[in-house]
Length: 463
Ligand code: 4AD
Ligand code: MG
Image 1 (spheres, rainbow, N blue to C red):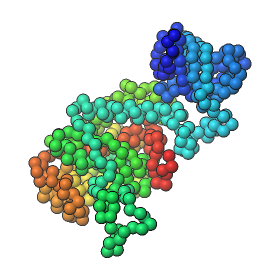
Image 2 (image 1 turned 90 degrees about the vertical axis):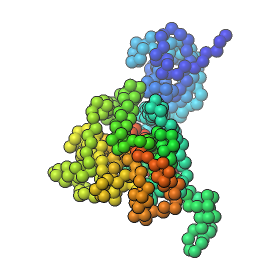
Image 3 (image 1 turned 120 degrees about the vertical axis):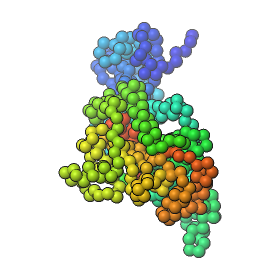
Image 4 (image 1 turned 60 degrees about the vertical axis):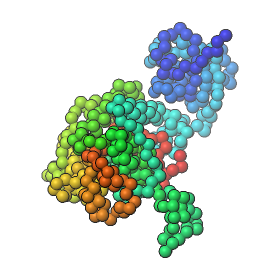
């Protein structure tokens, strides 16, 4: 006899009744009476559960008792039409095996307090909730959609290093990587002697793959990176992680206009993919957390993003009657409250802000004729603020070197990069999309810790 193979719940719910089937998963709920039990089973393949109907007389008492919320089981039986479960089919149990019991007295999911904050303290349970099931499936779908998007456009997925010597963003918020014994640091002229360190130099975890990405783009044309990124900024906000994922496309022969066009098309196409492929999960999140999620997602795919210069943005903020915590004047780095005012209150759609004061942006951005601003662009989204940061790159060797000197950065450490401007330099552009910021938008969750399975934030790296 052929042994019956397990079918995932997602498949079962789409299967015609009549067949003998097997399902495995974790019990969500058990209800019923002395004669019959209704078990809601979930295996993570979908937000939806499959209902199992078990006549208690057919099974040992101990088995029925062992089936409690959180227990893992295997069920074999006939797939039959369902009248009451809200699904088309259910399983009439013939065999039941309990893999792992889950003591109702100690299993934390029994507790009333299952707030997102509380869940962050119970790693094993957090990922098993409906909420994280939905978030993890959407996260997976978005990662796939990103690779699909660039693959179809002929971009090359470039793997850039996580360990690096260079502070690409010049913000100085890097995690150091060392094998030196911190209790006995070798010293030279009163300073740590990094020549004794693993790489013979001071090294850190990368804050961006862009500089290496530029080498890729100026070799094969169009590349993108998609990997972990590390920032030791001590900002405990709902939008910052110490370890996050970033997607950084970099394109030879693109000017800032091409760059903005790609950014807008990219993000719209990702949101469209989510609407087309993740609707069960999005509906769940819409109902549970954010009643205007679906509406917001649809609206973004349909509206053109508003393009406006930083200078104009500052004028709008200055002329607004809004009380901001951080005062506004030309030259400031915009805070999330300013970005959200422009997007949510003033324009009522996503905004692409361009041409920033050079003092608040990184050394590599292309300088405008005015000598004051650079050709950067930030894409600002409702509820989030900055979701993308990018620019056209300075392609002139002379201007780039002058800027590096002005900022007191080390030219020596950047020679490998500067060489791209020395030999066959081209106009080129790129941007970085924060993967978790995208997920905040697509899931409607309000804290960035809740769109990554194992968040890393200041004073928090346990799991
Ligand atoms: O604006 P940023 O700092 O730009 C860069 O790193 C450029 N090298 C990108 C490029 O042009 N290739 O970061 C890009 C995006 C931000 O817009 C934001 O979405 C996200 O990365 N981001 C963070 N996300 C989570 N936690 C943090 N601490 C983040 N810092 C930046
Ligand atoms: Mg930025």
